Image (cartoon, rainbow, N blue to C red; front, side):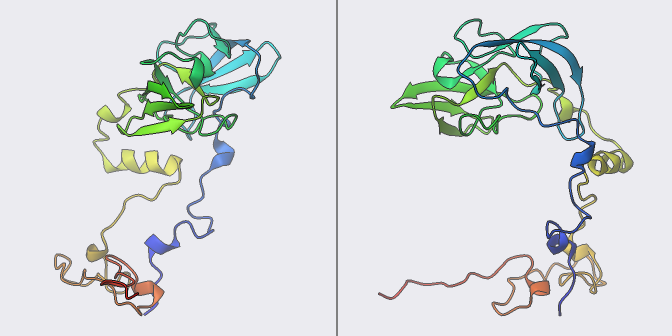
Length: 238
């Protein structure tokens, strides 16, 4: 019964769903990890199809040019700093151990020097809550609290581009082209709305959902869809 399901074809190494990274403007990350305080100047603010937030092109004193996720309120010609313990203004990057509690931050590193992994989407921010036991506790946009190492860096402020999701697409074509820019699958069709040849749940009675039941344990790969049966049930025998 091996059906080639589109849900299973994605992410298997084919070229149909690869992100068009060759069209991106570059990787948005912090400056190279250093113990020195370095000043930089914002040269330009650009957009990139791979990022929901605008990017700031910053040139530092050592001539290194970086793409930083732009915060709200930043402008061309403004000065930003990485390192140090002064001027906790938007766009400045510091270690978490140097940032006061209650400060809004974004683009938080998971490990020191990785360039930033958390809180990077437009309009988002995290908050430094407590510092205890050699760990920095931060509340992420999901309201979840996470501990970070003191040497991890973060940028002060709120990511620019807030309100992006407030404006509706209105037309399916608009949504299609927006998803196509990032090579995302759209539209996503329900399996029960497909034909029987395309999906195990599909049939000519498209509104009938009775076929959506746990897949058998020994089902072939084309049938392993929907509710996957548990590997085992009951109490383990010692």
